[in-house]
Image 1 (cartoon, helix red, strand yellow):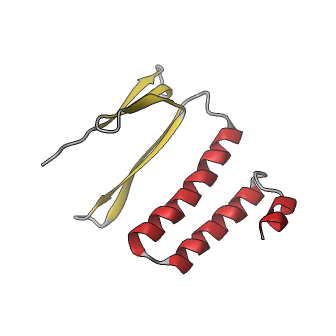
Image 2 (cartoon, rainbow, N blue to C red):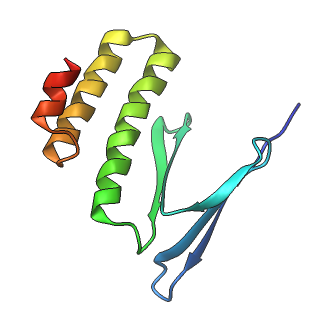
Image 3 (cartoon, rainbow, N blue to C red):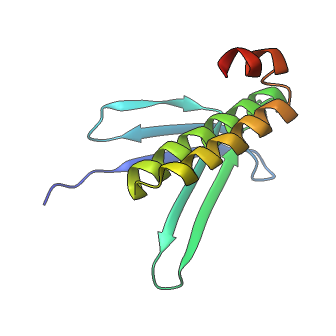
Length: 115
């Protein structure tokens, strides 16, 4: 069986707030510094999603808004790929678009052009 490792390293200040987040994926050959990370894993024993949400001091509110928006949209893609539920995936995308509008990432003009 092939094994792969995804490694996340944190450098934290005296209050345990991340100052630097570095990641590395062994089989993809990708690595780098990032300002934020959302990691979710499924525990089938307890039927719960476990998560680790990290962001550095340098992560701006504008970057966080964009990160959340992009995460919502990619979650819709992942849900569709995993389940084949196109309508429900589109509803997640609709919420992502609503969120993007609410936080100022998408203007009504852009919405009208895309429809």
